[in-house]
Amino acid sequence: MSKTQQRSIFVTVLAWIFIVLSGIFLVAAVLYGQGDKWLSLIDLLIAAALLITSFGLFKRWNWARRCAIGIMVLAILFGLFVTFKTLAEPSWGFLILFPLFGIPSIVISLLFGWFVKKLFSAPIMAEFGIEMPAVRSESEMRSEE
Image 1 (cartoon, rainbow, N blue to C red):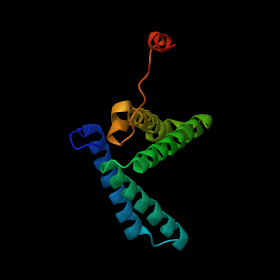
Image 2: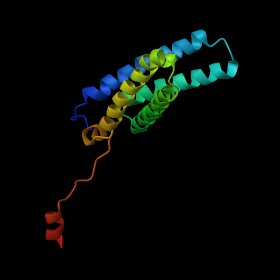
Image 3: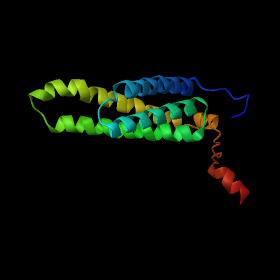
C-alpha cells in the first residue's frame, strides 16, 4: 500500500472489532480453560490465531484478509447449519430455540456475507496491495486487432 493511499474505515473498524472479540475469547480461554487440557489448548490456539489475524487485518496484510474471509465463511456455514438444524426439529422447543439461535445465526451470516463481499471489492483489495487488472471493453479489444 502506498503512503498516499487512504486506509478505509471499513477495514479499520472490522479489524478493531475482531481484535476486541478475539482478545475477549483469548482471556476467556485462559481464565475458564480449567477442563479438558486438549480442549483448553485448542481454545488458546484458536484465540491466538484469531488475534494474530485481526492484527494482520489492521496492518493490511493480505494473508490476514484471506484468513478473515475463511473464518467468516466458516462462521456462515456454521450459522446456516444451526439454523437448518433448528428448523429441522420443530417442537415446543422450536418456539424458544429459533428466536434465540436461528434468527441471530441468519443475521450474523448475512452480515459476514456482506463483510466477505466487501473484502473482495477492488478498492479494499488495493489496500492490501492487490491491483485488479483493468477490464477492457469489446471495442478496445477490436481496435487492437
